Image 1 (cartoon, rainbow, N blue to C red):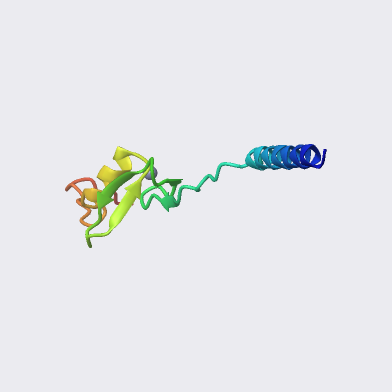
Image 2: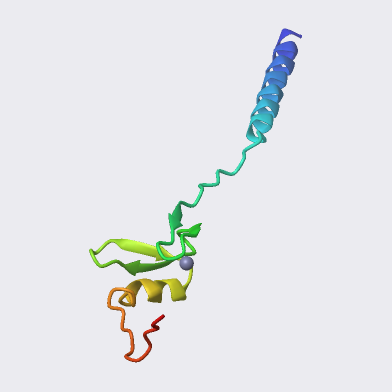
Length: 94
Ligand SMILES: [Zn+2]
């Protein structure tokens, strides 16, 4: 009789542990989303995800990110404003 009680108690404990383990494993786990760092486009000033940006080497070796190839080309190409060429005869007088 005592052995049977002991066995029943043992089984109950085992079942309790199993249930507890099972319930513990079903805890809500929210997936951790690591935010993508934003980078600023130096040409147009837009902020874009670094994963989706177009990287390029800056003049001093640093990595610069752009929103589009147009912006990258503008950045890499020499600035047209640095040497303004005014065609002769275009001056307005007056
Ligand atoms: Zn841009």
